[in-house]
Image 1 (cartoon, rainbow, N blue to C red):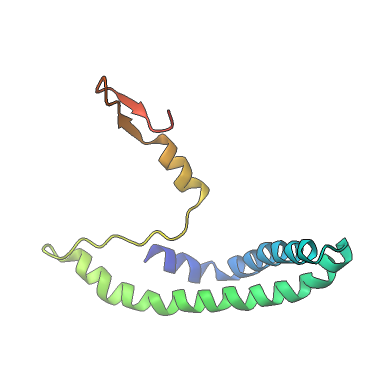
Image 2 (image 1 turned 30 degrees about the vertical axis):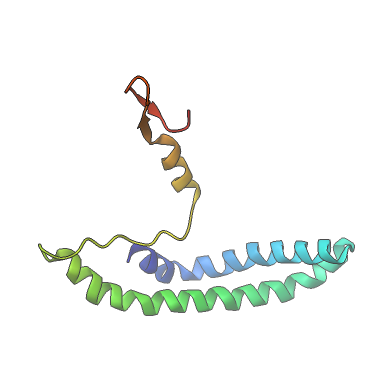
Length: 119
């Protein structure tokens, strides 16, 4: 529910930013794929930006539609004392997720001591 809310509320900033970064990456891939010069990348950028702007706008619309069942169904199930435990699907991995994974500790098999997961 939080991801859907953040995507819908932050969409004026997220859509152009995501479209620009994805469009730039796609334009670089077009240039490398064609084996051309930087002019190909410059010509491809408006096309790839427009495509990704449309794509991320559709994604935001999907998050907005998904927000209503989350509030109406999942929230009610969460607050019920005997309701099911609902865990969100984590399909996005961010820097903070990787940072948290590195900070988690585990138990050493031989000594039984707690050690950081990164070691």
